[in-house]
Figure 1 (cartoon, rainbow, N blue to C red):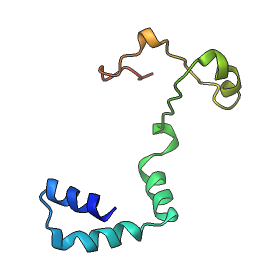
Figure 2 (tube, helix red, strand yellow):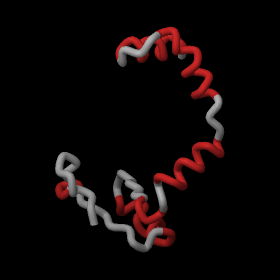
Figure 3 (cartoon, rainbow, N blue to C red):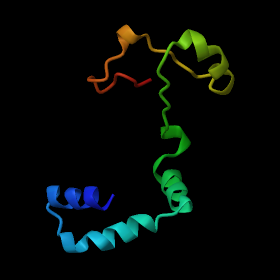
Figure 4 (spheres, helix red, strand yellow):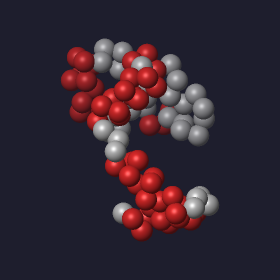
Length: 87
């Protein structure tokens, strides 16, 4: 882990002397911090969940909890296009 953090510091031109402080800061993040961040930046009206696979095998069960489910046929899916998954 330390080696990969150091490599990241070098590749992003960050001073190696700050590595220890950054690792300490990352390790100090709690589950509550993540929940607070998610609540602020990912409110329910902005969330999207993508489930990949054979929709025939799970769509009916998933529609019970997500009635707005909208299967997108593989041939219609364009991840290169900005609105490929927009409603």
